[in-house]
Length: 84
Image (cartoon, rainbow, N blue to C red; front, side, top):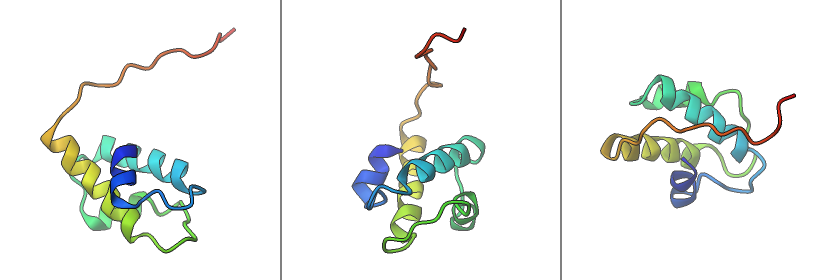
């Protein structure tokens, strides 16, 4: 996802990028082949005040296409802190 954002100009000033990445990852986890309308709806809770959302939407679509052509295994979540 991060690579798609970088390649397609979706990571602009960086303020909204973490939220956009998380929302996009959640969207693709539930809808691996989203339509443009689904992408717009999936990212609707995040605001970008740079130049608009077009490149962000294109980045999510590119990530979906990349995942389709190169499916990866389920990511392994590692514990990064002591959960006492």
